[in-house]
Structures are given as structure tokens and as C-alpha cells.
Length: 399
Image: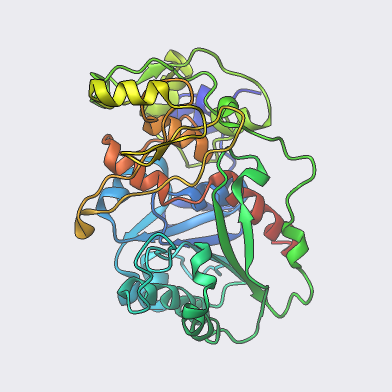
């Protein structure tokens, strides 16, 4: 069978099955889901691969919206502050046409809860966690999933968690789940907390143990995840076009199907898909200009060691990548994220290497700048982990 990105746009349209009904720009052939705080779309991609129809996605970052719309042209993107969004507005803007919402997912901003931040209980971003559950309570989907950093479980944020979850009536709430992306087939040890609940009409449908890591999951190391990407990156590759570079190989296996294939209906930038197929090109191989002193320090640094001046860690080929940081947006000082050092080259990693480590496919497009690319990747849930969780929810709830 030919992969979807082996087809022209016209062929793709002809080969898609006819839908019973449309929701906005999407076809209704699967349980309907809304992604709040969608960012670049890690949860959205995982949901689509798990068999959900993501009818709408909400976020108020205009820069990230460009990346999302490029990768998800069939999904309705709503650019709005969720604190100002009512459930009736959301239904209307999502163009649901009276169709039920089976699930609401999202990753409310975590900076106020993060252990590397100020951990201010009064950080205005913390209230967005409650607004997520307000919309769940008003729309009453069959299930919800909220993702955040481990710091949200700290005692100082107990009232925020309690007040948010108290809005829900008629829901079975699982104990917060701490899951690590590397346990599910991604190359990052990124660990996050997931709040999952479902309507009481599905008694006992899901248990915490249903989300235990699979015993047969392939261990994907940094070395494996970066396979096929150019190791020698020129500092002169600063533009989007110069950052498109040919793969040196295309391995086979479960992880590689996530990287090269599995393109759900209505998802993917056609230009990126075709350039990967026809020219073997991937985007985001953008170089960084290091001074000679930095180059020398990085070259002498052992794998797993930390460069003292920059505090950047050198990745281990046989290990997992630590959690990738996102940096800050213009409203918070425009600080670029601290990037890990390549395991064998004296440079920091490229956006495409970061995307690989996070589990994003090679056809997925991010911002053309390093700063915004790393913001989008670092703020995203690994689509590999998202798919594993949502596939289990769909199976257990028989959606």
C-alpha cells in the first residue's frame, strides 16, 4: 500500500473514504476531540494517530498558530485566551454542528508550577489550569486529559488542584499519573503528570495500571533517534531553505514508522511531505554560531558532562535526552532555551534533532527560527506518548 505522502493532493482527496458528516474543515468518522492549549500540536498529532478526530484546537500564541495550521490544515484553530472563552463560544467557534465532544485534552501552561521557575502561587498562568476544568465541566465530554509538570503535585498548589477538580461532577477521576516519554518509545526522559477522568456512565472502564509502560516497548536512545540526520551542520545554515538537508539513511522499525510515515487524514504540510518523499529533505537543520572558545570546550566535553559556563549538558549516545526546555516568549523577555550539546559534535543540537528526540515526525514543520522552534518543541507533549495514552483511552471507553 502506498503511503499517504506518496500521493498528490488530488490523489489524496480521491482516496479518502467518504464521511458521514463534516465538522468544520474535518470529516466526522471518529470520536471527536478538542485540544486546549494546543501549542504546535504534540497532543493533537498523538490523538489523530490514536483514531480521534480533532475538530478544534485552541491557543493564543499567534506565532505557534502558524506552525499548527501548517501541520493541521484540516483542524479548526481558535486563537483566543481560554480564560475569556465560554463553552458556548467554544462550541460555536469549533463549528461542531450539534455533534458531541468525546474528549477534551490539553496542557495548561506549566511555568508557574515548574521546579526551575519562581513557583509563584499567584502566577496568573496558574489559573488556566482551572479554566481547563471549567470548560470540561461545562461541555461534559466523555473523558478529559490534562498534562502538566511534576511540580503541580507540590503541596503549595494543592488548593489549585482541589478547586479545579471540584468543578467536575459525575466523573471518575484517576489518581494523577506520572509518565515518562522514554518508557513509551521516545528518546527523551521527559516526565509529566497526567490528570485523566471519564464520565461515571463508564464504571470501572479505566484504571491507573492501564497506563503502565508496555513491556515490549522499544528502547530508543539518542543515538538511534538521531540516525539519518546530518551530523556536520554549518553555522551558515541560518535560513529555512538552507536548513533543509537530505537524510543519510531511512531505517525501518516501529520508531521509524512514527518518524517517516503514519500521516493521518487531513494532517501534514503537503510541501514538506513531498520534499521528504521526492528529495529526502527534512527541515530544521539550522546551525548555531559558536566562538572558537566554545567550540574547544564542547569538543573536550565527555558525554553526559555539563559545560560549566553555559550549564549545557552533552547528550549520551546510549542514553535518553533530558527534558528539552522551551525558553520564553516576547512577553517574558524572549530568552532562548538552553539546548543540549550534540553527543559527538562540538555544537548544540538543531531544531530537527530536538524534534526527533521529542518524537515528532520528519515531515512535521516548526517555526523557521531556532528560538521559536525550540519553544514549540519544548512546550509540546511527545506525540509518541500522547498516542499511547489516547489509544488506551479510546480502547477502554470503546469510543
